[in-house]
Length: 210
Image (cartoon, rainbow, N blue to C red; front, side, top):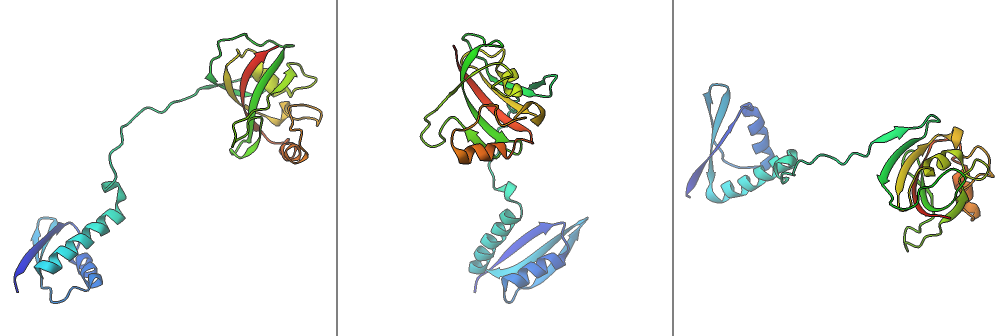
């Protein structure tokens, strides 16, 4: 039978290769060890068919152990960073989109959409249906009587078409059940108010200043 010579060079001890070869159940293999400095060179006498089979298996083992070797290189890009600023009442705001329309001021009646999430990212409520995309925007005055104070401070200064994301502490959130916005349905309202004592994330889009 024709025989081929397979050579593996590595800094691993010969026992590592021996254990791997035993696992592969290769028969009638003669190992000879040659040392070159800190490396070990092992010569294995294999049949042509066995050599090809073991080469494929050995390559698969390397890619499984170090998948980064098989992954394509990704272009390194700077991440898009949305910087936030903090208000005196503890509200943290990120400007996502700068609007170009009328600016909202305290006391104005405004129409807007929002998505409310817990601080860990879990969804609570939204005026935009996640499946159909249909929206039911709310209309509220920017005062401290109807709207939660933290959200009022987020909307004041926004321009129509603008979008902001904000982390609202509970101290300026739903301090009582009469404050809005809250869902009309009992289940979503109960879900929202059950998280009233924790920080909430609001993403708002100002649609109109009425």
